[in-house]
Image 1 (cartoon, chains in turn red, brown):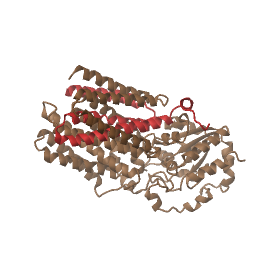
Image 2: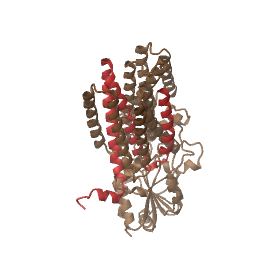
Image 3: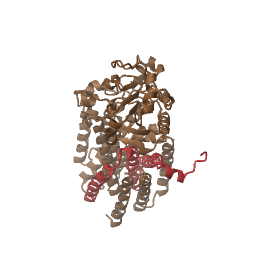
Image 4: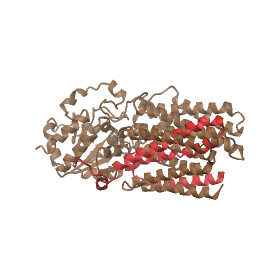
Length: 101
Length: 493
């Protein structure tokens, strides 16, 4: 199990390095806020601990659960908002007709 | 470990990586984000399926509560506040990982080898707490609530190193004694890591913020990855690693763009930092709500001239006095124009005016581009977001590498609220804090208009020799006023 985790970490580090390096500086802020949302993946750890924890640890798991969910949802939502601004003008017009134009 | 766990984990992580892959182009980026969110949803559902049925309803309630807070937060923040938003979310993520690791400890041993359990959980606890403490200070600074000046205690660097070392020793101690003294050691680790985070961020000033935000981003990922080991969750371990790597890449990009070493930023290792920390904030900007307190504290002798909109370069002798007359002619004759925005523009909230300026110039059939330095904002890529928000087409925004070869053939460069990132002293002079820092080589273009608040040097404290060059016209004052002034001149013969 430990080895599986270590292998996954190494593979992710290598693949991640390749993929992330190619993101243009234009999109670095959305990249970072998206990554930020991903760091909220700890929510799944929080769920696991919450569902299995003895009473005395539950309060910590509860706080972890709430904080991590804020992290995930907030992160993905600000990223979505930003990326909408980077959409192509034409594409945008197609998607939403602006009433006052 | 069950085979289906591995398969699901690979799918989810592949989803995340595919999402990042889509982020390589602005056309597909929003799908990348959605793919990431979908993978996250699957991961959460899988976590419920895998762990069992008891307590799901309560857990869901907490998740819904968190989602609502997250949505409200995500919907209400302004684009200019993005750095502190990301900082805040980093802090929450770090705290969550620390808590997961902490409660995993109380949950019993995850591994047969107690050393693995204890070392991974106490390390995740330490790094998560460090991220939380550091992010807290960064958010306070960025949001202008407190501590905006780089704050330095005596022996700051030494103290910071000592704290971090102590935390490391405590973590090792806790692991090797396999948690025998954890009731004493864990509170000590938490306190130490919190202090470490505070000390790390306290001394960081405005223009160094992109570096520390990137670093905290990376740390929040690393904390998640190690927490993943602690609770035996490979999805957590893999995804945390992705975030950690992304943060490190961005940290490196930012450090290079500012010609600073990470060590120098964090501990003040470089001798420059001492003198530099005394210098107020970076690119000059009017002291509006966003401006740092330092700006308003030092009344500039030049603020008085800001109303007149013009000033003359003191050195050049070929009759610069009538810039009023020169300006319209220069703008009229320019075919190709590059606008270089700095954080001063954002502070003056002049993005809309800049967009209007670009539109007015394009109406006159001039070619307009934006040259964007990596550290033009308060976090990586921040300036692009601010311009995109103002409705400027991303295809006109060019990064340092693409814009620098263009300056030579450019008739006019309009600098708005930027100082250090265009300072030719970075290439020419030696032994200045910015020597060797990659800059936008605006000095190569035929004419330059600089709309900065005043002629004080930027964050680095190095005077900008451009201000006295013959082909440079300076308009001191609030960009929210000087830029509309320029718009008025476009098309006026």
